[in-house]
Length: 549
Image (spheres, rainbow, N blue to C red):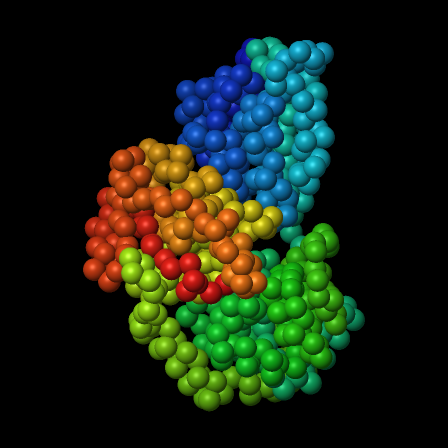
């Protein structure tokens, strides 16, 4: 990074500060208040700038980057309508606890007749994101430091508000310097609470280890595997931690609404659940059905409160890996025997479950010109590499996508549904695909969400040379609304969408596009994925009356 004591402009100093904070991927859309800063970042070869066609997608791409890499995502947009355009994306990041810095331009103070003038602090506050004002050229870098520190330590989105009239101001010898985000190390849980937790384990006959995204590190994985072997407990994950125990003995998969039958049985029989880094949401506990009457020990890496809907029997705060190892040590010291819960019978049932998934299911009969979704997704799953990133937009197809397109590590599942909005998938897929280049990114979207936000950003996926496969679940309806109408025996016409040939649109933009209406065209889609040399879009034509939520 250049020496900021040289006479440089504020916009140049901000670009250099981004480099100083390790920003190698910047997502954005330029406008009056940020174009010179972005230009300095690009001309200085400080990192990769990914230009999106819509501000919301730029912020969503930074969210996808953060989820895929574990680092703070960074985006930049201009003022006024650019900021209002990203409100849903900011709310998504705030609800998801995702570290994010968005550099947002602002109009000149006092220019009340500026067309794009708006109270930006109030707009940001409505989304749940934090707001930091760039106070002056002299404090600009210090203010930006605060934004990066806050985003990383609080795991939240932070809007850095930078006035357009200051962008060409000089930064002199008195300007602040970059202060990188300090690493925070935690001690393992200890004391009476830890001993009480181990006491619960010692008396458990059917313990279960459950890991959430907060435990999704290589060190934590190893410590949890060692603890599981020591107490002879099966392993499960939340949806967001899917793949953490991939390939491990007695991995029962996802705990929650996506549990397979064997997993559900094991969870319901458990008498003590150790939940590491899991928030224990209603989706994980099946509205409390999985934890009712069961002792639950929750181990979290911080004390920050999130909407945790299930109160555990005991909660510990400490380093995940260190706490797991401390539990193993105490068990060894007390010479507590294993539970015996991981026996040959469970191993055989899990093998049978795996074999059942590996077999291609027979297709369900659907209307002419459509194909069974489960059968189609499973065949596409077999055609794709086992290691891939999955981004699933929101819609009634989403649980089927999560079940049938599993990932092998938690960072490869990009979750887009923190705020319950459709259309957040394409942006996050671009962020993931530009950050992760050694395996493909698979986006599954509904026709409603994709029409809302996905079409224009296909050009970004192509221009950036991404290895992306887009699967559009095209049932020509807004699924949740279609279900509500049909459940009440009402005409679902208002939930229907005009027929769009997504494959043809993709082809016109330069992508590979395949329309799937039967087994023959499904084979063509498989072949296109296997032979792809650029992004592929698969338009799955589905029967709206044959889709389960």
